[in-house]
Length: 309
Image 1: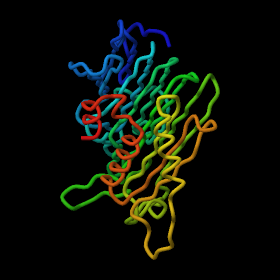
Image 2 (image 1 turned 90 degrees about the horizontal axis):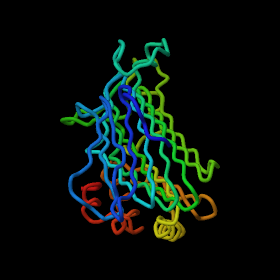
Image 3 (image 1 turned 135 degrees about the vertical axis):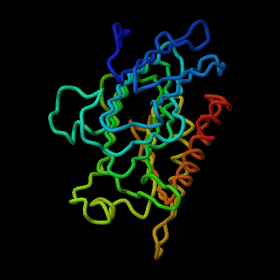
Image 4 (image 1 turned 45 degrees about the vertical axis):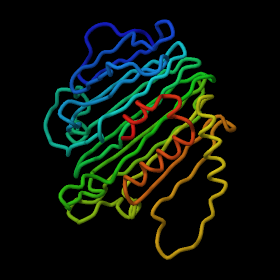
């Protein structure tokens, strides 16, 4: 990935992290509205850098387009966080600052889109630990994330979403129009994982529930964690042992939490998934997995608290 030059388009951003001596150092950090990037002033571990990926106004509105390019080099480690859940507001007709000339379809123009392209160099690590995506009623959201690694790179990718906004006892559970998330992981030019989730309401909008509601209830939060590389070996060992010890029993009601684990690349990586009836339960499961896998030791107690406080 080459250094960016010239003026960024609306919603574009660039992060490049390397080392200055033994200390992690950002060689490039740029962003344009509605994207906002913040680097904490305080120093963490020498080889670890941290950046917060935010949006102005506390959420993404209809028509927002975000494109973030990330490069991690020289054996450094980058922790990417958000502040609170990524809120996606309902679609509204019209034209928007970040939209391109195409497409002409008003529904597609009003959708909110995020694109992240990441290159992780040899012996470098990315910890992508955002808060969950929360889509409001009638929102349309699509994200696509691509990660290019070498065999000695490491990746921890957390991708999770909730059923919607809950406010004063009046909820919007599974009322968004469309949610699509796609993650691709490439190692030495070969794709080892492509994970896609699509929820789309195909009803006429007049009924009380969306067409996909029965496929996702009774759960309120879903999460996936993709791991790869030498830095995540303890997580993989923990998940392999924990999953092999699971015993399922027949019961009259659905479990309040379900999780699964699949290996990638003959044990060099893996995908863990979780669904639960509350967001807090999923968060507790994520914390348990990552903590037992030694992530707190890799990024330090302060960054760990920032990620999961």
